[in-house]
Image (cartoon, rainbow, N blue to C red):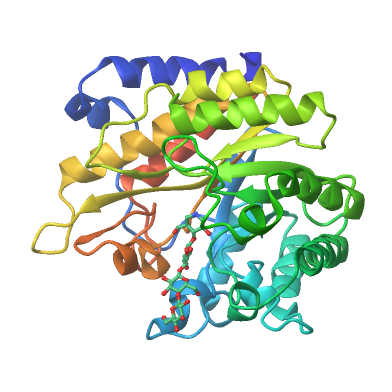
Length: 375
Ligand code: G3I
């Protein structure tokens, strides 16, 4: 455990040992609903040195079917909060295959370029998402009639081109995303690369990404791997094997799309620690905590307290693990969250309301970050 993070651990110990209803009152999780936040009073300022607090940058994906313009380029208040609060940004959809490589011979780098430029202007690091995935691939790829050799060069060229373009600008890449099922089998039938080229393509993807940007840290990323289970076991075994073969794998990350319907994955820290023990960096990459909305659409105080507790415990677990220096939430305002679009009747999953005022979850994150700081 890092000495600088002892304070966070102490906070967590208190939070974990009391019933949920008490956590809300014991923890400093005031509900600050006024949108006019003090400029200095932000997550990134509260964070310990070297610890990156990040968010997804809203755009592409479900946003394209919603009745608002592109959030990142069109919403001034969104951009202000994005710059003020976060020291890391992830492209929510704008670096995925279907977005950045819409036709075989055409790339669409416009939005990814803007995100990287914004990050530089605001002294933020960038997480790249993602290079080898079964989902959000363009039709030309999924429905194309390619030989194995052609597919292999399509993947290699894409990785070289995309990773190479942002060489030096992207701190961590999710090279392989969601490659295992819940039972720890490779998603062979769903994943075009593994199905057509065999599992060896995973190592190649990491090698190509490393050649294109030797400084970027290369990650496996998935959901449902917060705890010790068949899926996280499969990653542990695969990564140990790849590292023994000197494949450049540097990190393992848990997305952490959580729900108050289910218990908190209490073995998150223990799980991350076993990856750290392999010499890997770890990260939380897509945290949100959704809930069943009451008929009024407004969460109860108890729901908000439970949500704050889940956010806080996820952060505390990461702070307590050596090499878990990147903690990203999947959007920071309910205004643009993917959750209500995917889960009927659920929502309120982020740390700010639609008008950017702060929920108890926000305050819990900030106070735990501040307690963990060397001040
Ligand atoms: O592909 C269809 C297209 O054919 C159709 O015309 C269009 C009409 O709306 O929808 C398109 O699908 C959309 C898809 O993005 C591709 O653009 C879905 O409706 C939309 O819901 C989807 O949203 C994104 C989702 O990934 C797709 O898996 C979300 O914006 C994005 O937040 C979400 O992010 C993922 C991470 O990348 C990986 N981990 C899980 C996380 C949450 O699902």
